[in-house]
Picture (cartoon, rainbow, N blue to C red):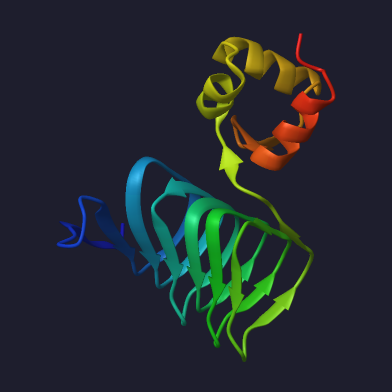
Length: 171
């Protein structure tokens, strides 16, 4: 399959996976993983941890992750929950949503960028608003609470939740 080196990192307990082949499909990681793509990938990528697209890689995918570093070519929309970095050799064609963005001189970016505030998941919002998680999902599904759908998961910007709660919409 072209996956080289699945090893424990000395810095933390996250796994490191390196892909040096051509792949297509859907990759999804529930646990934190440091994923580095050096080959070609087409499909969808969802994960926790750090995703790195190497300088010789070409990725055509919808990408959702925590920390994303791009040094190669990417075509597709990106949601980086913590930070997105475009290295000098990066070429990105697609829209991005992230709270922190670092575009290093030389990188090429074509698309729209939405800078978001701190993101919360369903459980975080339930605790924050003191409402059960099932009710939060119901509000999000019905469009009654400001939310962003990423795959099958809901994300919420803390500032928008604060503004929504201040309007008295919570019942």
